[in-house]
Image (cartoon, rainbow, N blue to C red):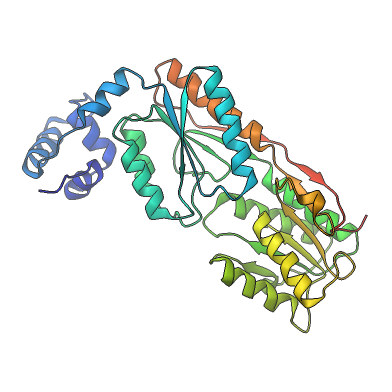
Length: 337
């Protein structure tokens, strides 16, 4: 018989993962009738708790996991460095997992980590993640999670972010004050909190200057690189192209540069470009790219500090907390000054 997970057991019983977990631990919070149902179903389905996981939860592995959607983005490399610096100072090991923006892979990684290999998890969501049962199940397995950048509001824990709304407002404001009146926003994903906040900052800046919002100027670059390239090329080769582009992430700004070079569009004379980016080569591009640089290293340090503080106090439940760090607008040659 295939191994039954805690979530599958909960689904069969029509109750939450938390209820099943507490019933199996004979918690006083669960009624006797419910406990009986859970134990009978667990026995029938051959469910067995992982003894290795239980051992490590009482005897820490002094290892934490960092889960990121990609490593091609310099932001995540800097954030991991921040985590490692803090973890190593406190004699913890760090395991790195990359989801490649794939929800199914993210789900498998978290299920794997339920075996007790790590004491806690620091993560940033994949762009395709729309449900969070796999995260809830990990937390119910007494492995705490801290989010950074791409967060999940539905899970109560610490969340480390930057001032995405204010930064996006300031970036759009900068474009408008330097002559742009038709600005396109390149959106990464409707699922992500950071994309929503950045989009709202962009819209608020347009509202400030009484610039009408055009739905066709919000470009959903939610597919693969080729799909994003086609959408940006179609936008810039149209009979009425925008005079400014706000890219929610650096990859979309780099694609914009490629398209502009192919079409002969001059930056910043014909098109001004700004984006969220920690790209170290931004000053070396032609022209140098105006960016909103996030304190990625500090975000990683903060996330690790919060997680390790709770682990060292032997607490697995991390209270809900929002820690917001400030980003910096760095003006370079892709926008007019």
